[in-house]
Amino acid sequence: MLASARGLTKTFGDFVAVDGIDVEVRRGEAFGFLGPNGAGKSSTMRMIGCVSPATGGELRIFGQDPAVDGPAIRARLGSCPQADMLDEELTVQENLWIYGRYFGLTKAQTRKRATELLDFAQLTDRRGDKVEPLSGGMKRRLTIARSLINNPELLLLDEPTTGLDPQARHILWDRLFRLKRQGVTLIITTHYMDEAEQLCDRLVVMDHGRIVAEGSPRDLITRYSTREVVELRFDTDDHSDHIDAVTGVAAASRVELLPDRLLVYTDDGDATSADLHARGVIPLSTLVRRSTLEDVFLHLTGRTLVD
Amino acid sequence: MSSSTVQSTATTTAPGGGGRAGRGGHGIREPLSWLERIRAVVGYFLTVYRRTWRGSIIGRFASPLFFLLAMGLGLGSLVDAKAGGVGGLSYLHFVVPAIVATQSMWVAMGESTYQVMGYFKWNKMYAAMLATPLRVADILTGHLLTVVFHLATATTIFVAVAAEFGGFAGWGALWCIPIGVLTGLAFAVPVFAYTASQQTEDGYNILFRMVVSPLMLFSGTFFPIAQLPVWLQPIAWATPLWHGVELARGAATGVVSSPVAAWVHVAALLAFVGIGWVLALRLFTRRLVA
Image (cartoon, rainbow over all chains, first blue to last red; front, side, top):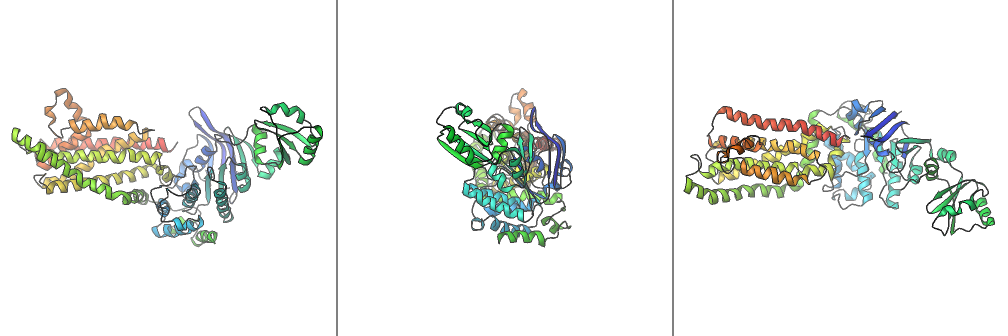
């Protein structure tokens, strides 16, 4: 067990950010915290990263207590916070060189490691450039490269692809897969269900500081959703007008109302669509898709992940 | 290919081994010594300085020249002609040591206001450092040592330039360098603490207008505080600048009222540094470790 929490709590004044969570992360896995903004993911991450003391409960990283051995734990982990925290006035490689020294690496070790990591982060040809003009994806890759300077066993990634364009996200995911294959344990927070499905072996779904479900992405979908979903958009200001017409349609088990569409949860999307057609229900558009973690979250909390 | 290079580091370094190589591997790592931690922090700030030193050095040379021109040739010739100097000293010799202390205050203010705010808020370098084995006290110590370096550079240049143009009467002027550093530090450390308590830079307006500028005028820099109304004089005693000014002037001119007074000045400056340190450590911790 690389990290474990029991009854972990974080409060800021009266506000309970993390409300007694239990988590266990195993060596070598990619573990996710999925939840909307404000669910307590970042607070949890900061406690695991030993930069924020827990208010209550028990936390162990590498078997050590962050309250006692914070610096020793931090020496062995890498941390990518939501904000990049780079010195944009310095060059790409200077940012790496400086960081290696914080971990007590010698100058030679740092330079060698920086060269490897620039290659890994696909930034070798920008190594002598200032950070400031780099794209968001490059800065994020540099932040990840920097967090690997000490060859960490555990890498913490807080919202690693938030604000990046789709291409930059895919490059980043590819790099994270490589790290995982090399045996680095990843802990990732995200409010993107596709990211969680892509990257995580196991995850917990968080809402209002609590864990509402735990399992592999596949498990969670099987447990909390149906095989397929039919998304219906109608020409209306209020989709609730159409709930009655859709309720009880073939193969469907339930209907969720969103502001801009109805989601019909079904074991057979085509059968459901055909039955809707037979009933004379004519939406503007019909989309049959597989269930995702977004559906799990919606089912568990009644809300969508992104706003 | 790139992945194999990263992998190779993991396997070629001895995991968990003692010594420096152990820090590159997995498992428990040898903790950094205090000196290593401080050097790493100072290393960052000096890297930043390497990028900006040209601009700052020009200012360091220019500022004593401006003061000598204005105070020595301008105001000084008038005071010397009309009043025969101040307390038996030429006005230039009276004012230059005090300006060393005053300019040290300005350098300290420059290094401990917007600069420090930037490391909290803008590039978040303090937070980035805390994600490593470094602790808050390391960051504070390392950054303040960098400030000492800036104060020492600025003061040394000032004293050298002023000496070249006849600003001092003798070798006692060399005392102005450590005194200037100590005076600057008596501002920098408490202002580090103040900055840590501020969310925006709005407070600096008040700090500069209501504290720093009046201090420059009323701490005995340009005229002895005996010229002030009696009720104002105790206020000067409570400010670090007056102690620095008195100390620098006494050391440079050899005109010291008593050795005890000199030690009281040193003690007062050290108290500002010490109390400032306690506050700064507490406020930095509160801000960074939430």
